[in-house]
Length: 199
Ligand code: SF4
Image (cartoon, rainbow, N blue to C red; front, side, top):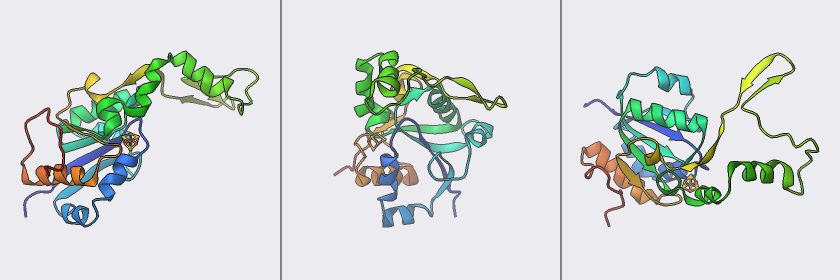
């Protein structure tokens, strides 16, 4: 049997609904798994850490899916890592390819969003107006680092070169099935294409 096709899935700034579409392929996914090896799927499914992906050789993964947009420094970094490690990279879903609902936050500055989220909402009890800090000390012992909240929402192809796009929020399982089928058959469309069901 030919070598399995290695895939990776990264959830950036999204809700994981796109990944549910992969699972929604049902029987088609069961059939496809005979041809696919999941090398990385984080942070949702596989017990593989970001550092494990960083340690993999460049272009050692055949196809990578990234769902969700990019708003945090960590997401920006991992998007670049995925680009380095994957021969083919797919912007998977409306957030990754077009910004979708999270992209509407670009109508406000990062400062306005943090103030609204952490100070102004009526249910918030934050008399000192404390905002998330990229670095802080916990109990005087641990220096934890939080990802930086970036100035705006960006889609994947504003950060790295993207080979294919799959639309939808979440993508229709038929679109995902068409992409997986094309990957298995080595029959992907010209680069830059949007992958649909083909119906
Ligand atoms: Fe969630 Fe829709 Fe964004 Fe996918 S495209 S991550 S389903 S909000």
